[in-house]
Amino acid sequence: MLRKIYLYGDPVLETDCDPVTDEAFGTPELIQLVEDMFETMDDSQGVGLAAPQIGETKRLFVVDVSAGEDRSQRRVLINPEIVDTSGEQFGEEGCLSIPGFREKVRRPFRVTAKARDVEGNEHELEGDNLLARAILHENDHLNGVLFLQHLSALKRSLIQRKIQKLRKKGEWD
Ligand code: NI
Image (cartoon, rainbow, N blue to C red; front, side, top):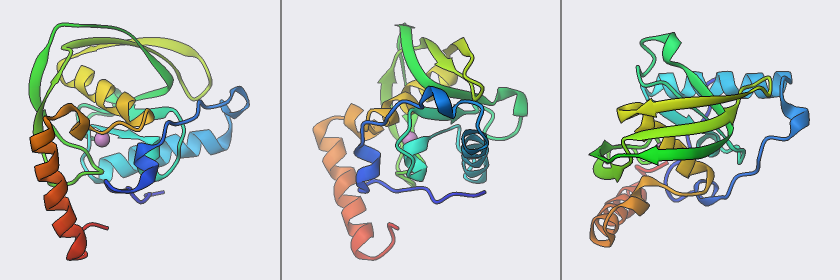
């Protein structure tokens, strides 16, 4: 099922999310939630979507660096932990909760993450370049952090003012 994507300004995006409980793994509810997240992400041609973006304050996210072109690129990370990062990249980043705005963000080039899958099995995932960027961006969401927080205060307030204007015109909902 296609889910509503919450936009910047909604408090759900600034929530420190709760871990998925042991009892939830393998349940139809969790499997459905993950399916909904892929469907919603693909519909917007995104490369990542975190649960709080659809109003679920749980520690899980999906990524697909092919933006829906190649199903083998689908990854789901539940209760993820970033175990290692290295290198650096500086590139454009956007967010489905902040549509229309893209800015350059500095991130590590490579990341190693540990996470569970829908059945609860623990796995380790390594990624570099865009995959690393997507994993780190989505992991931030689980801590209530948006990419705007990685920008300079000046750039951030400029974007916030533009969004404020869109909101007043009723174009931010
Ligand atoms: Ni995002």
